[in-house]
Amino acid sequence: MYQEATAINHPPSQTEAPAKTARRLKITSAELEALLWVRDELASGRIKHEPTDRKQLCKLALGAPSAFNMSFFRCGTAACVGGWMKHKLGDDVVFSAPFMNLFYPLSWPTGSLEDIQPKHAVRAIDSFLKNGYPKWHLVSD
Image (cartoon, rainbow, N blue to C red; front, side):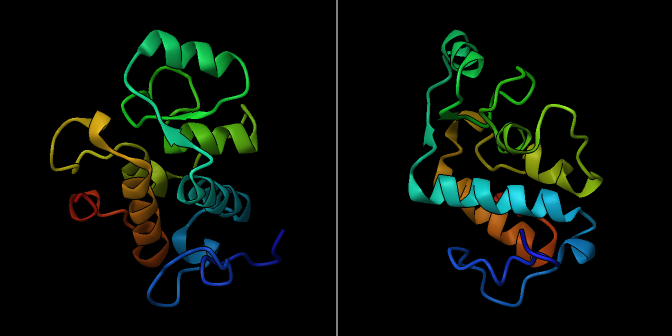
């Protein structure tokens, strides 16, 4: 773990400018580490998008999670960005307030959260790390 984790000293991130520290993002260092881990897993393809078969996603969540789908943030699965971070940090974690816009992409332009692919989540995470806001409305194709 980094002493004072930042997104800029995490090589796989494609942020364009010096990223904010956990303190400046108003999140914990552990949350930043988990977010960087999720970002890398999505970017590498180790976490792949799964269709909206709720039963299948919930079934996957009972074992080791392997799916990504932003439309299932209330299911309790590890399918969304927040669910994957929770998987990494443990069930008892309560996330800091700045994550609200990252976990609930209300500004996603198509309206269907099913359309969010891992590449879009990576772009939103990068924006969050750079600006403190995910800018979901700018990361779609």
